[in-house]
Image (cartoon, rainbow, N blue to C red):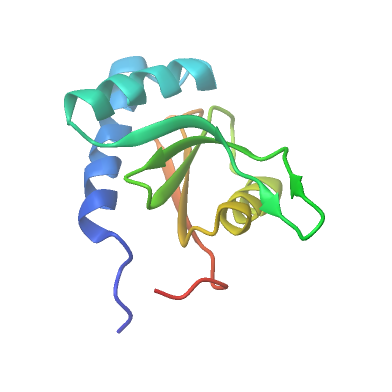
Length: 128
């Protein structure tokens, strides 16, 4: 059976996601959820970066245009959504982030439905 990537960190993040949903409900904006998650990460003394640009590095130069909501412990990318459903485009966007930043795991968390919806996305191009 394959090992779960960053199991303890993801367990902690899931708890923060559910706490944020319980506090704000499902009618807030993405920025409001990001703000609450930032407060929760600080309170838990978890290292993170917010709204970081991830650049594709080419021989000719770097290509920008990939800004992820959160990078947690320099291991897991988190993309916050506040809409009815997670779409195929959301998965493609996360894969683009993962490949640009050379990260292995991303989490798409959607607060827009009645319960928080969490999806893990793995960049299979990167081996640990």
